[in-house]
Length: 230
Image (cartoon, rainbow, N blue to C red; front, side, top):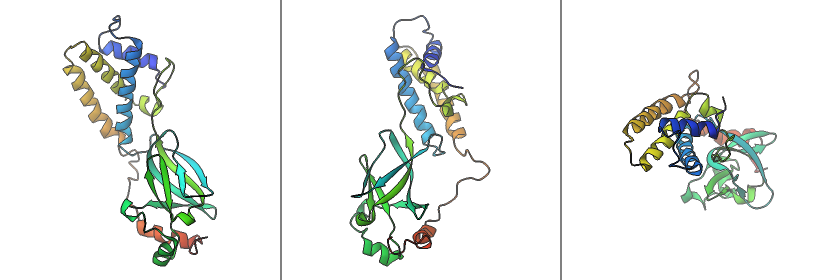
């Protein structure tokens, strides 16, 4: 069920016992709610269970950089389009930034393996002279702060009742501003944190995550016909 900013504000005021109080204005309530929303979002993102993961594609024609999406937050993976299929790209270490040349990639692995690294808001691809092509970016977007009363949080947060965290956070901030005791609200929020972090993890209980076989990636390019850097 979609939960709106208006509903979150009402619930926060109820928890703070401030339904009829004008001590805190609507703008400040919205600030509290957005801060709580950001914290809850981080709790779910930290589980790395792809509640919010999305994709986009970018094509490099010249150079070796891709500008990250404006809403970019966390990278989940980068693929390179090769002969109609996508193959995984791996990250290079910062200390390896000058080691990724065409001759080295081909000589060591009989392939031209594209690798990447995030620097600022830019994705760098190496080897530079082989960076041209189409890439698929898997990433977690940042939140869009709530502003209008009808704005909603993602259903991935509300369908499990996790939006209560936002309301507890906002109520705690409001009570703290009034210099009231917030220990009960804090305790409730900590209990909810424990529940959320426990239940947000392991979405797929049928087949849990496994160790990635990086060695297999060394041969993907050769199998798909990229052993000469084509």
